[in-house]
Image (cartoon, helix red, strand yellow):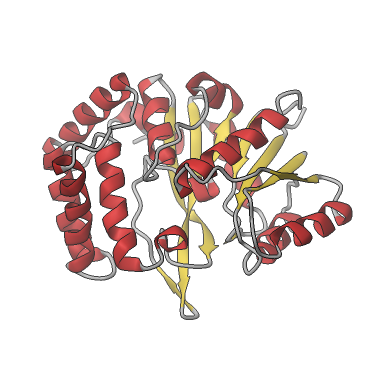
Amino acid sequence: MQAGYVIVTAAYNEADHLAATVASVVRQTLPPARWVIVDDGSTDETPTLLSAWAWQYPFLLSLRRERDRTQSYFASNVHALMAGVRHLAHERYEFLAVLDADITLPDDYYEQILARFKADPKLGVASGIYENLVAGRLERVLHDRRSASKAIQVFRRECFEALGGYVPLPHGGEDTCACIMARMNGWKSWSFPELKAVHHRPTGVGNAGGLLRARFLQGLGEWGLSTHPVFMVAKSLRRCALERPRIVGGVLRLSGYAYGCLRREPRWMPPAAARYVRREQLGRLFCFNRIPRRHRHAAQMP
């Protein structure tokens, strides 16, 4: 029997982008068994649009969650996603897809990603990559082959449930945390650059209000993820050269990390996962970022 999948989306004030996302899911060559979109307390036209689409597409279900104003944007997003996952608890499916509400997918995205899961039984979490649409032009986004982006992330259900779902981190990085915990528990995490989606705004600016603040918050998120300081310096230097805005962006990332350290901000990663990722990061530095064979997707094996 063909493996089925479901999609969960959290949407907050996404009326400007959601139509393109819905259209790209409707066009999928392998359609989902169910798509739950959780409206996370939107104040724009998002609820009205979702009601209309739920009538039009039988596989789409719209839920409403009242936003908890004491939660950060990132934590609220995770709680909304997990509400959608709980709603699907009694559905029969093998794969769980998480999709942002401002993404356009290639028509065969889920058919292709599920084929890669079937090729490697140890693959627990995977994604393609996305490019940001900025001023009408597509902009490359840096990615790590072992880090699957939450915007277009897909889990083997067994893996997701073993992890206990997403950890609601106040400054983001829950997708990175999930990949780390998956590897720690013997699963593989992988991203496939040949599967490209379009993100309809620069990464992180939806909640930050601007690119510079987004870079600072991303650094603060790295502190919350227990990133090793030496690895953080190396990563920031690389971003100075390769990520917009050049130099300033990398400096702001490192500044956000330093701010978290000086303020003694909480580190939200489970302790075992924090220890694991620091060992892994030091290993990457000493091995020039070479990925161990046991962690590679089957198609990438030498």
